[in-house]
Amino acid sequence: MSHRSRRTRLVLVALAVLTLIGAVATGASAFVLLQLGRIERHELAGVLTSAPRQPVTAADVVIDQPTSIAANPDSETDAGADRNSEVTRGDGMTSVVDSSSDADSLDAVDLSAGEPVLPGGSTGENYLLVGTDSTLGLAPDDPLRNGHSDFSRLADVIMVIRLRDDGTVAMMSIPRDLAAEIAGTSDIAGTGVVAKINSAYNRDTTTAARAARLIDTVENNLGITLQHYVEVDFQAFLRLVDAVGGVTMSFDRPLRDQLKEDATDPADSRSGFFTPAGTHRLDGRQALAYVRSRHLEAQSGDGSWQRYGAWNDLARNDRQRAFMRIAAGQVAPALFANPLKLLSVLDIAADHVSASDTLGIVSDGRRLASEFSGIDFDADVEDYKLKLVDVHEPVRWSLGLDPGRAEHNQRVLDVFGGIGWDDIVESRVKVQVTGTGRHRLAAELAEIGFDAQAAGELPEGISEPPGRTVVYLAPVGRLAAGLLASHLLPVPEFAGYAELDATTVILHIGDEPPRTDPGYRRVDVPAAEQLVP
Image (cartoon, rainbow, N blue to C red; front, side, top):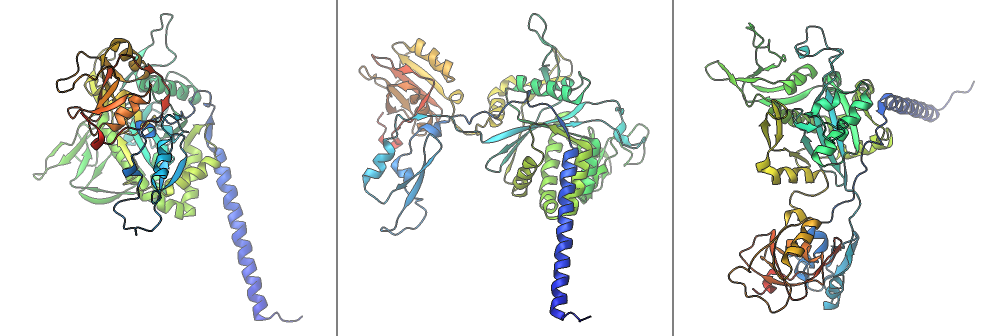
């Protein structure tokens, strides 16, 4: 038998290694698909709502002035160099304008005035994340069993997470004690049962039915749409934190949950949570005790223990979102770089996570993994809180949306409808209507969505224009005025009035009142320096 050359042996070894790697990769892929296939999926596609089209905002209808179309003034560009700028049109497409050419190029942009503007496609989707308080799998003496049984199945955590197409994330907790009309409980008179919102989850016997009623209750009471549903339990949280090696947190003083009755050991608390001051790596058991703690106490300098923060579900909701943010920021990069940890997490998900059938196990799994691997959890995750008040009617010891902070709460909910916090939309524009037919026109504008009111005479300092329809705006009110004008035919004139703010305009109706149209058209609003009072 002839001896193989050293080079031949190296080639054979290399082929063997590549074959082994291929076999392992194939086995790992098969294992991933197997684990993903084990995740329980509920038939909820008929309950969940498709992502709505992106609402039109003032920025979509107001044509940029030439000064804003030009290249960035902070950049240094030679006079003879090409300076092209992108201009987003109302249809969502992008045009490139050569701002170094003659005025005809800018006039071409102005020619888009009057073009219809349609809502764009969806820019994100909402996930209803529910954490249930099932204690199956916990040790019989585990403090986390306090007040729970293996047969209880309550929605202990309710959270809406919006994943946007641009890679940013918005989070909002829904307090489980929020008073709400429970979906599917209306009687012949159309009156439904009002109860704490988490009770929508425990009125049915199957997970799919519980999820469906909770989804409908959230959508009906908060006016947001939900596209996906994900549910996890105590054990999932605990095992997931352990699987990734724990989560590091810093504490400026010793913390514990309130002691059990007659306890003397500082760690013998109601939830079992106790930590010294400093930076510590919490395992799954500690992390779960921390986020579920209801009665946190902090140790002061004299060694005594004092109440720490508010002892209510709102404070607990804040801790839950903060922990998720910290954990995701620490875990995501390492998880996607460590196949063994990823496979371990998939194994846990298969046992303790369920989802709606709107999620494609493989395709959406890959997409979500790609999105989360690129998120900056400090800069790209937005945390929103509803403003609430205690209410005792019709449900005792419950919470309600604060009527004194209605504008804030609506802005929070708008975020989960695709409207940015600072976007100008109809509901955020106040219109004072004066002149002929002001009551009718104010009613029509209110029907479109504006905060429109018929007013008396024009304010002092404004001379009534002879027979013309004019929109008066402040120098900072171009967007609000443009949004109003986009619904009026013909487009009115514009004039300045410095006493107004960015979202308040005056519409003075001339001899021929304009027609209103719920649709949108592109409008050209003069720059502040061109507005004549």
